[in-house]
Amino acid sequence: FYRNESHMHNVPENSETHFKVVVVSDQFEDMKTIQRHRTVYKILGEEMSPTGGKVHAMAIVAKTPSQWSKTASIPPSPSCRGGDGSLPSKNEKK
Image (cartoon, rainbow, N blue to C red):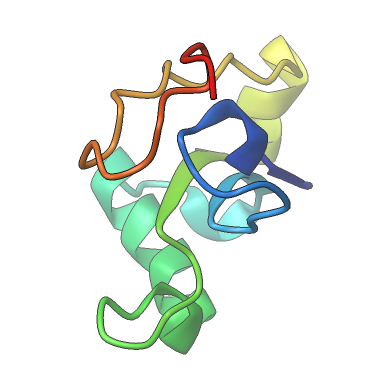
């Protein structure tokens, strides 16, 4: 599962830069959270590259099937922290 969450951030309209992905896999057994996230980043490769990637930020939910069966819910993403301030706020009048 993935969702484009760019609309929740201070980016130009119709951007595709902020995503949430949910990955459920047996391969995550015995892995710490950081190892699971690194596995997802590795799969995405160039898309996540700081020098040429199209994705700026990604919220990752990485669970084993047994963990997913206990909760089967997707937590909300954190609120936007405002970026670098180069764009007007969505609440700011134009």
